[in-house]
Amino acid sequence: MRRSAWLAGLLLASLAPAAAQESVNSPAPTLVIAGQVAHPRTVTLAELQAMPAATVDVATTTSAGVQHVTYTGPLLWTLVQAAQPVGEPGRGNTALQHTFLARGQDGYAVALSIGEIDPRMEGKQVVVANARDGQPMATLRLVVPGDLHAARSVRDLVAVEVR
Ligand SMILES: Nc1nc2c(c(=O)[nH]1)N[C@H]1C(S)=C(S)[C@@H](COP(=O)(O)O)O[C@H]1N2
Ligand SMILES: [Mo]
Image (cartoon, rainbow, N blue to C red; front, top):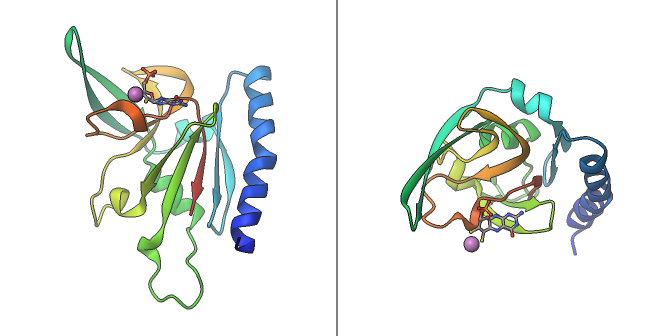
Protein backbone atom coordinates (compact mmCIF):
# COMPACT_ATOMS: atom_id res chain seq x y z
CA MET A 1 0.00 0.00 0.00
CA ARG A 2 1.26 3.48 -0.79
CA ARG A 3 2.37 5.41 2.25
CA SER A 4 -0.08 8.23 1.52
CA ALA A 5 -2.99 5.77 1.37
CA TRP A 6 -1.85 4.19 4.59
CA LEU A 7 -1.71 7.61 6.26
CA ALA A 8 -5.18 8.46 4.99
CA GLY A 9 -6.48 5.16 6.39
CA LEU A 10 -4.87 5.86 9.72
CA LEU A 11 -6.34 9.36 9.76
CA LEU A 12 -9.84 8.13 8.97
CA ALA A 13 -9.57 5.30 11.50
CA SER A 14 -8.42 7.68 14.22
CA LEU A 15 -11.18 10.17 13.47
CA ALA A 16 -14.05 7.69 13.20
CA PRO A 17 -14.33 6.94 16.95
CA ALA A 18 -14.24 10.68 17.68
CA ALA A 19 -17.11 11.24 15.26
CA ALA A 20 -19.11 8.40 16.81
CA GLN A 21 -18.47 9.81 20.27
CA GLU A 22 -19.58 13.23 19.15
CA SER A 23 -22.96 12.05 17.91
CA VAL A 24 -23.59 10.64 21.37
CA ASN A 25 -22.50 13.78 23.21
CA SER A 26 -23.78 16.38 20.80
CA PRO A 27 -26.42 16.42 18.07
CA ALA A 28 -24.22 18.52 15.77
CA PRO A 29 -22.70 16.37 13.01
CA THR A 30 -19.28 16.95 11.51
CA LEU A 31 -17.76 15.91 8.20
CA VAL A 32 -14.19 14.71 7.73
CA ILE A 33 -12.56 15.53 4.37
CA ALA A 34 -9.37 13.51 4.10
CA GLY A 35 -7.27 11.33 1.83
CA GLN A 36 -5.34 12.70 -1.15
CA VAL A 37 -5.76 16.37 -0.23
CA ALA A 38 -3.38 19.12 0.81
CA HIS A 39 -5.72 20.33 3.54
CA PRO A 40 -7.59 17.54 5.32
CA ARG A 41 -10.10 18.93 7.78
CA THR A 42 -13.15 18.30 9.86
CA VAL A 43 -15.97 20.63 8.88
CA THR A 44 -18.53 21.47 11.54
CA LEU A 45 -22.24 21.86 10.96
CA ALA A 46 -21.94 25.60 11.66
CA GLU A 47 -19.27 25.87 8.95
CA LEU A 48 -21.40 23.89 6.49
CA GLN A 49 -24.38 26.14 7.21
CA ALA A 50 -22.27 29.26 6.61
CA MET A 51 -21.18 28.11 3.14
CA PRO A 52 -22.99 29.05 -0.08
CA ALA A 53 -25.73 26.46 -0.48
CA ALA A 54 -27.45 24.79 -3.41
CA THR A 55 -30.97 23.39 -3.28
CA VAL A 56 -31.74 20.29 -5.32
CA ASP A 57 -35.01 18.55 -6.03
CA VAL A 58 -35.07 14.80 -5.62
CA ALA A 59 -37.91 12.71 -7.00
CA THR A 60 -38.60 9.32 -5.44
CA THR A 61 -41.04 6.84 -6.89
CA THR A 62 -43.06 5.08 -4.21
CA SER A 63 -46.31 3.08 -4.23
CA ALA A 64 -48.01 6.45 -3.59
CA GLY A 65 -46.53 7.88 -6.80
CA VAL A 66 -43.65 10.27 -7.33
CA GLN A 67 -42.68 12.31 -4.28
CA HIS A 68 -40.52 15.41 -4.46
CA VAL A 69 -38.17 16.47 -1.70
CA THR A 70 -35.69 19.34 -1.70
CA TYR A 71 -32.30 19.13 -0.04
CA THR A 72 -30.07 22.11 0.72
CA GLY A 73 -26.38 22.30 1.53
CA PRO A 74 -22.95 23.17 0.15
CA LEU A 75 -21.81 21.47 -3.04
CA LEU A 76 -19.43 18.56 -2.54
CA TRP A 77 -17.34 20.28 -5.25
CA THR A 78 -16.86 23.35 -3.03
CA LEU A 79 -15.72 21.26 -0.06
CA VAL A 80 -13.36 19.16 -2.18
CA GLN A 81 -11.85 22.21 -3.88
CA ALA A 82 -11.21 23.84 -0.50
CA ALA A 83 -9.33 20.72 0.64
CA GLN A 84 -7.21 20.84 -2.57
CA PRO A 85 -6.90 17.33 -4.03
CA VAL A 86 -3.29 16.43 -4.80
CA GLY A 87 -2.21 14.29 -7.71
CA GLU A 88 0.57 11.75 -7.82
CA PRO A 89 3.90 13.41 -8.63
CA GLY A 90 5.15 13.18 -12.21
CA ARG A 91 1.81 12.27 -13.73
CA GLY A 92 1.07 15.53 -15.54
CA ASN A 93 -2.42 16.98 -15.19
CA THR A 94 -3.94 14.89 -12.43
CA ALA A 95 -7.02 17.04 -11.81
CA LEU A 96 -9.45 14.41 -13.12
CA GLN A 97 -7.88 11.34 -11.51
CA HIS A 98 -9.71 11.63 -8.23
CA THR A 99 -12.56 9.58 -6.87
CA PHE A 100 -14.36 9.95 -3.54
CA LEU A 101 -15.57 7.46 -1.02
CA ALA A 102 -18.46 9.01 0.89
CA ARG A 103 -19.08 7.17 4.13
CA GLY A 104 -21.96 7.06 6.59
CA GLN A 105 -21.76 6.63 10.34
CA ASP A 106 -22.63 2.92 9.91
CA GLY A 107 -19.73 2.34 7.50
CA TYR A 108 -21.91 2.30 4.39
CA ALA A 109 -19.90 3.88 1.59
CA VAL A 110 -20.41 4.87 -2.03
CA ALA A 111 -17.99 6.09 -4.70
CA LEU A 112 -18.20 9.18 -6.88
CA SER A 113 -15.68 10.71 -9.27
CA ILE A 114 -14.44 14.26 -9.65
CA GLY A 115 -15.60 14.35 -13.28
CA GLU A 116 -19.18 13.93 -12.09
CA ILE A 117 -19.10 17.07 -9.98
CA ASP A 118 -16.58 19.31 -11.78
CA PRO A 119 -18.64 22.19 -13.25
CA ARG A 120 -16.57 21.94 -16.45
CA MET A 121 -17.50 18.26 -16.84
CA GLU A 122 -20.76 16.64 -15.75
CA GLY A 123 -21.27 19.34 -13.12
CA LYS A 124 -23.75 17.36 -11.07
CA GLN A 125 -25.06 19.34 -8.09
CA VAL A 126 -24.05 16.79 -5.48
CA VAL A 127 -24.75 18.39 -2.10
CA VAL A 128 -23.88 17.71 1.51
CA ALA A 129 -27.40 18.34 2.72
CA ASN A 130 -28.11 19.87 6.10
CA ALA A 131 -31.72 20.85 5.40
CA ARG A 132 -34.66 18.98 3.92
CA ASP A 133 -37.64 20.91 2.55
CA GLY A 134 -36.17 23.97 4.25
CA GLN A 135 -36.04 22.34 7.69
CA PRO A 136 -32.64 21.79 9.39
CA MET A 137 -31.60 18.14 9.58
CA ALA A 138 -29.98 16.51 12.64
CA THR A 139 -27.57 14.57 10.43
CA LEU A 140 -25.89 15.15 7.08
CA ARG A 141 -26.87 13.39 3.87
CA LEU A 142 -25.09 13.09 0.56
CA VAL A 143 -27.58 13.88 -2.19
CA VAL A 144 -26.88 12.90 -5.80
CA PRO A 145 -29.57 14.47 -7.97
CA GLY A 146 -30.71 12.43 -10.94
CA ASP A 147 -30.06 9.02 -9.42
CA LEU A 148 -33.01 6.70 -10.11
CA HIS A 149 -32.41 4.73 -6.93
CA ALA A 150 -31.46 6.28 -3.57
CA ALA A 151 -28.50 3.98 -2.91
CA ARG A 152 -25.94 6.82 -3.16
CA SER A 153 -28.00 9.01 -0.82
CA VAL A 154 -25.66 8.33 2.10
CA ARG A 155 -27.40 9.17 5.34
CA ASP A 156 -25.45 10.12 8.51
CA LEU A 157 -22.61 11.19 6.22
CA VAL A 158 -19.42 11.46 8.32
CA ALA A 159 -16.48 11.32 5.92
CA VAL A 160 -15.38 11.93 2.35
CA GLU A 161 -12.12 10.27 1.43
CA VAL A 162 -10.45 11.69 -1.67
CA ARG A 163 -8.57 8.97 -3.56
N1 LIG B 1 -25.48 5.38 5.87
C1 LIG B 1 -26.26 4.70 5.02
N2 LIG B 1 -26.83 5.36 3.99
C2 LIG B 1 -27.61 4.69 3.13
C3 LIG B 1 -27.84 3.30 3.23
C4 LIG B 1 -27.23 2.63 4.34
O1 LIG B 1 -27.37 1.40 4.55
N3 LIG B 1 -26.46 3.37 5.21
N4 LIG B 1 -28.65 2.64 2.31
C5 LIG B 1 -28.85 3.31 1.01
C6 LIG B 1 -29.95 2.74 0.25
S1 LIG B 1 -29.65 1.27 -0.54
C7 LIG B 1 -31.15 3.41 0.08
S2 LIG B 1 -32.35 2.81 -0.94
C8 LIG B 1 -31.41 4.68 0.78
C9 LIG B 1 -32.70 4.66 1.56
O2 LIG B 1 -32.82 5.91 2.15
P1 LIG B 1 -33.65 6.13 3.50
O3 LIG B 1 -33.41 4.92 4.38
O4 LIG B 1 -33.15 7.34 4.13
O5 LIG B 1 -35.06 6.24 3.07
O6 LIG B 1 -30.35 5.03 1.68
C10 LIG B 1 -29.08 4.80 1.17
N5 LIG B 1 -28.16 5.38 2.09
MO1 LIG C 1 -31.66 0.70 -1.55
